[in-house]
Length: 440
Image (tube, helix red, strand yellow):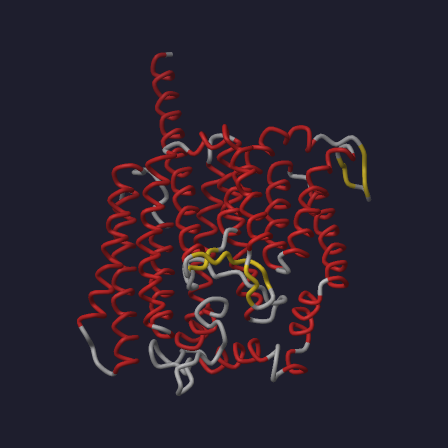
């Protein structure tokens, strides 16, 4: 079966699940089946059908699994957001349309992802500019300074800064990987390069700690540094960079804990939410109760206890930071595990694309985007389940938020473009080898 035919088959399955989800949620909330639930589902199906047509004409050899997985996660997210707040679901639907436009423009304007390597310093500067704008003009919400408010809309520049920094690091590390990987000494029995080559690691460490202090957000800082550590390890295969990087982050996190009260509060809630059950620990405890209430099979879409009688969510910020709790409540432990498996499939296909990419920049770009996606997913699900301290980042494709949805659809487009180019080049190389062999 050709890649696009396989993609179409999986998209049809995602479309069926989307229609069932919307109808189930609508009937659970309003106790009737309305044509509006079918209209919303139809709009969703049309959007991804158009993206599939674009794939057929522009990216015919791209990976067939990424788009259906993204569609399924988006469908679950829209259904749960509608369950919590129909008005927010309508806004999220508009953001989905805008995200589809961003996806199309990314494919049509960039065409070849390798071209991004030529502008890596400009793109890297743009990423830093987005972070600087957030530091200067950001609005503090729940203690973290991650949002820009403009004309009644909230915008999270860090979502796009993440992609810009990955593109810059992919180009930079591809150029410097030989220097960074040449061992000239030993540290604790491990071969290590010259001390001066640890400069980029120190710079990224300083930047991450600066973000931790100025933005007062543990998640954004951790995400930035771990992306760099993952990329430099994949570029050089030197474990010492990962060990030194995590050691430096541990030192910086300790300093931030001593200096930033918000970070202290996050750790205190993580260690013992019961001590502040009526105040700062209330949100996390409600999240744990909500997930436990779902049991193994869940309460059913549209039938979980997610709202108080007055319409307030039982967990503050349920539609954004704690959307995973809503999924676990209505779909149960099996549904929550199924969602995690979808994320694992997305990340696996992303790293598979990186492995088969024919050039160094494409390899690091696909690996960096996949690592960023995986780390963001782990950080937010880990925070909601109390595995790690809670942060304010979103769950990709599922949480409510326009900037997150747009950025992740751009990330998806870049991965698919790398996949298409890799398959075209590899198949062309095989054909060329066959022709040469026949001529010989």
